[in-house]
Image (cartoon, rainbow, N blue to C red):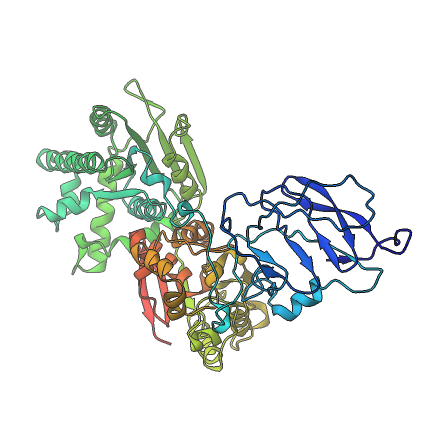
Length: 599
């Protein structure tokens, strides 16, 4: 930046004392006609060097690339108002530049920064030959990934030198190195959403990178040949059936404990999905888990007396394998009898049962109220806090969530990655087709639209908002959220995969080794792991919504959402095939059912 001096010094030599910012403080700088130089000598990252005329020159030195480069000290042979400096040291700055070289590489203008190129540098940094020369600031904060000048003349300035610490190339999930074992035991009557909650916990823990698995007592019963069990099987007076149910539940617990013991040196959670309606059963479970050293236990109880919620759950429960091929009316009657059998022996969770303090979380009326007891007493335990975060968000109401990948964009057509490019004509036609489909699906209120803030997102949201078929009273709500933007490629933004492979083969090889944890170099560069952490907020928002929602996003972001609702392992996210149509997730008794619609 150029500033006009207050007044020239006596004698017309125009020497202006000023201050130069550097990483260790503020150092004085003397500016003479057609010459300005750094005299800081701090050697800790200041650009230093000498600015002469309108260009920079690279200086060859064996010290180039050293960790603590010093700065060249040089003073004009003119009367100075400050104390003379020591003799100049023959060193170079960290970028190895000296008068004569183009400054575009130093200041990141070759494909980065403000993009003005060498001409823009001349405008910014040329020192006027006028005697009343303007003082020029020489220091500029170095970029996170410094760029070397485009000496090879590569197309689009792609020969950037990537500098970063090796430890920043790959991300590391803390749950994969912290050892914590936890058993979650579901409690509640049938059709209270236990399986839905269990699957939601399983999906969210998987998204956190935590090893988690669910053990369902009903599934074990059906696997052992009890598929067509009637309501009489759940009668407490049926001793043989009761003994079998107890055996199956405890066998599920043993499988859960075996899973946790096999997951060494990491955080792991096992979920026991069963009714566990009696104190006797819960005491058995608690006693068995206490025998394992370092293994925690939390009970999660779902209570619901809201008839509207129960009726929806009853209808969804008819899709259970127990009633496959049965008449709907007969299936409903049998299921209601099963519920009444359980109600006869049901004992809600208490703070103390048989002299044992209970650590529990209660969900009342599908998320209307949440009660916890002794869940977060141990500050070293992380999983209970994550569980509470999710249970604060989920509810059992019916709804649909739609995902649409925006595009194609002009960058897609040219084969460039990332960037902030607009939709092509085909992309606009495609979004109009999506709007027409959504208008057909929406009966009452239109789905809320969530999108990023890039050009393609805003164009897509505008086309949806302006689509016909909606009355003025049913205008769409559009949330433009910056955190829904695409994964940031850092220095590789607006490059093609072939260019990355050609100019940065080591980076391409590193990404090929671990696509999920690889972090792109440069300012703002992210990995898929970083993207997952960024998407957690929006996933919880989608769980909280009581109506339908439509998410407009890029392919990489869509992979994260699909992985969450499908329960896909984190390492498989970069390889998920994302359809170009509409992906719909509708509420079911166990979680969400997926449907793909071609557009």
